[in-house]
Image 1: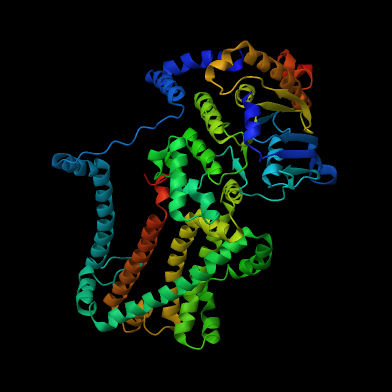
Image 2: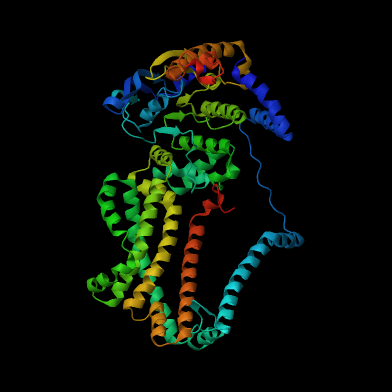
Length: 292
Length: 323
């Protein structure tokens, strides 16, 4: 229901990926990373992209961010083709990517500085954002003095400082421990609620994607294609208690089934059919090798 | 419920075993977070000022560790002087010969006689000036060129072959060529100093750019950094720790090169002073020259290290940092 609200409020930040194909290498080493993918993120919508590792979900995000050029198809932001990185798309990386030589506040100010915003205005904006992230008292610390969760909160508000139309997040909580992750998800959904910008969120965590998203794209194993699109009907604002509702759990089951098939497909060359029966090994008098 | 719930149930007792107060703290802060939406981190406690506390703090600063460190330093330097003193006192002669080596006292006398003479100070000033020029030119050319080589494939392809050929030639081997090349003695010595400092600075700068985390460059591009701003705001500060390693190594090599050049072709300078003392059979002056070189070199690398600490305060907190 809040999604419709978002649509009326926000008019910019429409990501449209059409018939995307990405191939790395040439000839014998050719790897099709992404094949014929079309997806979109409506203005103000929170969309997750989930799939087994190596399915090309990060590649897709890199294209939308402007780091990688697709082999086929195109990526559009508000109708304009994406060709290079820009401050209209904020990006949050898994590895925090804060500049270690800048104080926390200077990190948040970075995008504004690049845009030529004057010092006093940068300062005010950065402090407001740090306050939002609950880290104002750490403004003069260096990133190396902070914990992973704190760093990533700064990474998020730094990406928001230039008022981008979309936020691209590449497994932003992947490096955090489970407890911190859960709290970070709540913080993110709160921040998103306030900014109402489009988010494309890459993850391999099923609960995380359901808790945060309006819609979830499930990708297949390499070559990455869109396997399914799932709408999350949970109301906003999302709270931690919702994860215990039957609705939520049904979604988890549904997604698990979809992902499991793909993970198996992705690992097929490694494990064949034997791996699933506990490696199916018999240890005979000559050792493990006997069955091979 | 999904896998996380079961994972939590399994995980929590395990945490309990190892660190008892931990899970309680986590739960408390989590509850607080959902209430106020955004966690408020505790501000650092403001230290209250009291004389006894300051005094105790100072006393705590002089820990056993520090005393041991200082003691060992004194012992090692003392041992060196003792060896020198005994060697010269008993005219030690077993393959190495202390026969002509001046005693520490003779060198001290030399220092008090010559040490404050204009000639001696002028020699020091000349050497320092040459180092300053050679080292500065090496920095001004080496750092930007290193950044460009590190960043751009084509620049690298163009310059690296020449660098690889020139690098193994030691600065001292440049002495005859340098004398031919430059119009006066002074310029040729500065050039040799420059050669000595240049390659360590250049190569460390290149290494600094290469070891810069690519995700930082991507992050800067996303935040709208243009090429020039990327250089000034990301690549330069990101490479700074390696650049300073290069400067420190370069300074050392610059001194080596300078002294050699001064000994061979110089007029004035500490190297010249030392070699002249040998020609004039003024043995205490040789040692005085050597000690002077050591002290000057130590001072120069000390200055570089200090500037590094001032310019890169964040390194104190980096993994494996100073604190």
